[in-house]
Length: 113
Length: 114
Image (cartoon, rainbow over all chains, first blue to last red; front, side, top):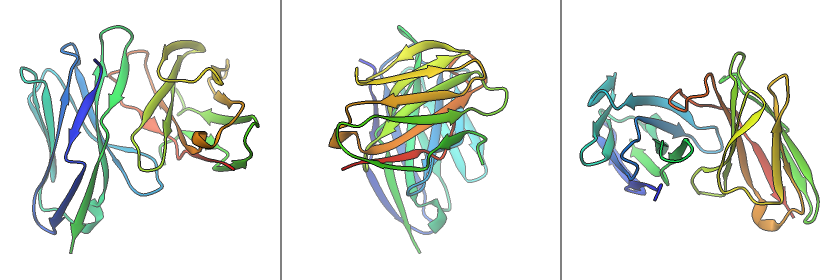
């Protein structure tokens, strides 16, 4: 199949805690994995992406890890802040057949002050 | 601002009608993608164009069609509208034909079918 599974669907944390969102993909040929943040009623915005030639990438409080053998990748947010509250989507580039970016079902993150 | 422009922002119409959604990609981007997002749902890929040609199709209904024009703007046509077509429709663009370049989304068109 071409599914990207994303867990959890909702995540509530206290301000300052870490948040981890996990995704698995099925196409072993996938080589590009972006993460998008979508605030209520707004457009998805790219926050970080990783290509299959690296296992980890960091950008300030955000990091993404990739395990190609297990076909899963994760988003890590440290020192969470209320403004991190949003829906986060992972995606994987499906390369078997015609190429397209397949999105996960989203994780609603709520950071409480 | 992503540089991707979508019009109109909001559209309210009745069942059975036909509407056209418009997208202008970022300057220099050749690929345009259309996604549908129903309430509290994920992003469903509809269709992709590259430099005027259809390149990939997702779960796009036969009632829906799209095209990309020589100036690279794209239009998504939705006909015989049903209540279930109410959703946010996003356009995204990327520079290259290869899909491993970042997608930049427009602000979307919110379609309400009554």
